[in-house]
Length: 428
Image (cartoon, rainbow, N blue to C red; front, side, top):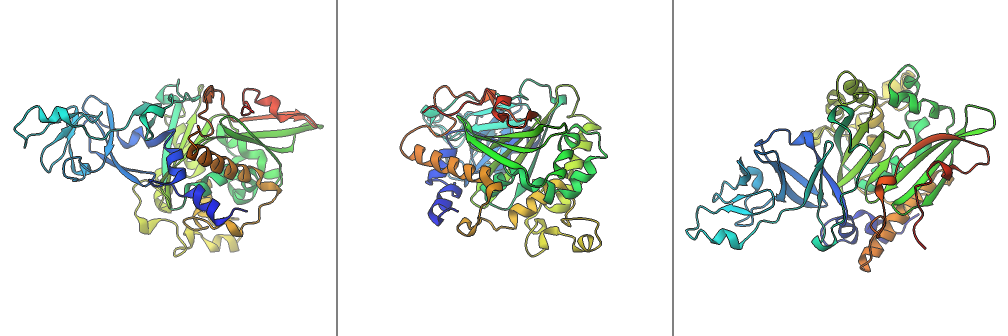
C-alpha cells in the first residue's frame, strides 16, 4: 500500500515533477515509424510527459521532433508545410530543419538574423520501426540502447501502437502481473490451444495454474521476476521470467515480445508492442494479421474498442459504456470477461480503476510481489534523480543489451536466476 504522497510522486510526469524529470533522462519511444510513413508527408502531433511536440519526416526521410509552437510567435507547427529539408510555419513563413536550425525567415530583411536563433529540437533515432527521442538535459544524454530486434529487417519485426485513457503505471502493473493471465484471459488462452502461432503456443500452458509462485529481484536495469508453475515433467518447475527496464519497457518471457508504455500526460498513455522473429516474417502477411488478430491489435478490433491511435474520445472504453463489455456473453457462458481480445481485456482492467488509481486503498498479496517492486523502482529512481544521482538503469556500466525475457524449466528447488545470468544486480 502506498501513501497518497508516494502515489502522486510516482504517477505525475508533467514539467516540474520529480517523475517527469526522471523519465526525461532516458531515450523514450515517441511514435511508431508507421505514423510518419512518407517523406514530405503531413506533420504529426505528439504528446509526451505533458508537453506538446510536432514530428515530421522531411523529403530526405529524416525525422524531426520540435516543440509544437513556433519559436517566433507561437503558432502550431502542426499547421506547418513540410518542404524539402524542413517544416515551414504558415504564419510568417519561418522554416526549420529537423535539428532546429532556422533555414528561412522571409519576413525579416536581415539574412543573417536566422543564424542567431534556433528552434528547440530534440535528438531523434529511428530504429526497427520505432522513433525514439531524448527530452532530458543535453549533458546527461545516455547512449541509445540496443535491443534484440534492432538487427532484424522490417520483415521480421512487427510494431503496433494503441492508446489508453489512464496513468501509465497502472498499465505497466498489468505487464508485471503473471497471476491475472489465466483468469482475465481465460478465453484467449483456451483458444491458444487451437492456434499454431508462436505467440499462442508460448502462452497456452498458463491457464492450468492460476496461482503461480512469484519471486522478484532488483537488477541494474530495474528488476526481473519469475512466475513458477508445475513443469511438464515430474520434478520440474516451469519458469517465466519477465524483465522490467526503466523507465517503461517490459521484455516478455516469450523472448520475442517487448511492450513499451509511454505517458502522454498524467491521465493517458500510448502502448507500443514490438514482436520479432528471426526465422519467420512476422512483419509480412499472413503472419502479421494472424498475430495481431489473436491478441486483438488488428485495426478492426482496436477501432471497435476505441483504442486505435486516431479513435475519438467518445469511442474509448469508459464507465458510461461499461468498458464495451458484453454482459450477455457472460450470462450465456460464451465468455468469462465479456470482452473480446486479450489486449482489450487488459485495457478494460487498467482504465476501469480510474485515470490515476488511488493506491492507498489497495491490499496487495503474495501474488503482487512484482507490482510492489515496480513501485519501489519508480520511487527510488525519482529520489535518486532529485538528489542529482543517476536513476536506475543509467549508472555507468549498465548494459541494457543483455536484458531479456526468458521461459524455461528447472528442477524443483533449483534457482531460476541461472536462466538469466547476464541480469546483474545493482552494485552495492
